[in-house]
Length: 239
Image (tube, rainbow, N blue to C red; front, side, top):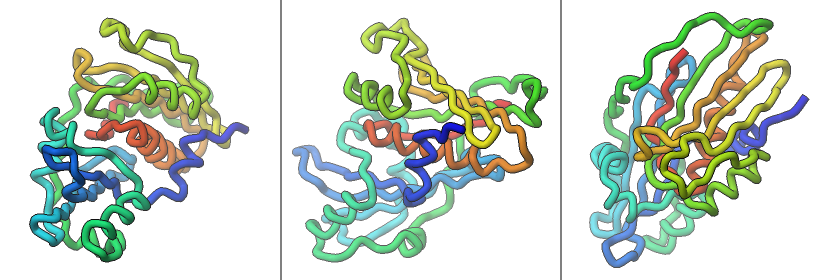
């Protein structure tokens, strides 16, 4: 049995996603903390967030900023994904206090931003032979994947790079296959939306009655893409 590197990454990860927000001069101005709300099948059902800035000196609902972040390339250039440790260090540097615990941060979150409807048609529902259920997800990301980011993902996933990142016509950059306790997982790293975004197309062949490994995998893959500067947009299920 082979355990996915993504599973190892996600097991101890905090639920919230953290971002440093810089001003126009490149100086850290504040923090954004986000959480994807998940449906029972681990697809995303909404996005909630809170923000803090030096100018306001308080936490507040930041749902409008989170929506802009997915649409506004200029804003994304002033935002960097970070882990909680980095966010806590910056917060202490900016205001001399400890970063609130995640339950306290959630108290500032507003109503969830609705997720966009799937842009892809649902495929057939028959499982692959030998499995109880087959699911197909797409984790969609905004921003550009750098050559260093691609190399880091290739190493982390033991993924041979099969396409040229510099060629805008190349859609699939690599594919990975893993087995976990009888279940089989495959994901492709690809350009989507005519190169305006990136996606991980994840196929989950489930043998048993439990699907916890699906959620662990999707969270882990999202974390590893964020580590390369990518902004998660949604997790859609197409099958």
